[in-house]
Image (cartoon, rainbow, N blue to C red; front, side):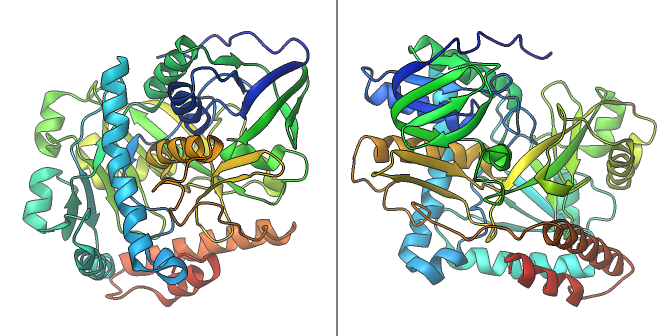
Length: 445
């Protein structure tokens, strides 16, 4: 599908009940649930380019129940019951997204085939075993099944697979179809979306743009990876880049060697991990890290992706599926993730200022945005609910370091993970200590 034609821009100052900055998944889900719950509210969404321009329209299409940063962080801060509640909420959100798309007639190529993660060397297999044991201790909402090399290959024939784990709480989606369909639905509900309208600053009860100011009782910051571009928020979340290539449609003979009949999403246990799906039109969408971070928290231009990134993803695709060596790459793009300093997503509302926010999903946003939208709805409407008591509500974290420390740290850590992956690929049987040290620094341990 091509790029949408941007809608009308803001034309002067406007008054609303709720102003949402950002027409990605977070902003659209928030508008959807707010308007459903309180139809009388005047809701305005402001978007710099067009709905879904950012990571919502440019992601790997994983609707998964993974908790950003892992559940253990919430065990430490809030206790096991709260951590379990967060996991249950994410699991329920997978089915909630599917239910809404069906109810609203949004065709987003959704297939709930589960999530398969494979191990490609002994160190990865050791991490797989440890991960499965940890997951199985939780029981509810986990449903992890450990697969032998043969069982994993029977699902998706990844060359060199030593084993895999699979769980059912994940669906493949077409990200752009979901975000564009959701935008259509919220506009039909009476929400006004002003596109081509860049917000420069968010103040208490005001969003300042290049085309006028929107005043509202509540202003929701739903800018995720683009948050650093707002006045005063340059170090709040780090804009991390993730890239994806898409092949031409594969012949039946190639698919016969790969399998993938269940349309599972596919990942691995590398430190610099990959993610992939089999699309509705029989392509492989294959993603991973390219240029991880641009100096000064700059973001990419329209998803522009360096040729070196496309080449490295192409090489990894061929390593996974040798039968794709002669397959053409039809598309390549990048999306920007919002990464908090502690890798923990957050949603909240400051009642005094009327400022609300959600984001920092670090790759789990296809699902977490739906949960955030429902949670923001309850917070804005003053409801005391199970959602407003989840441990990520009103979570605060310190800012990222100043430049050039930020750039040096991110690129140094990324290089460390690459070095660890190379050591493990050469046969190291346990996780590289380089990666373990990097995990401590990043907060991913």
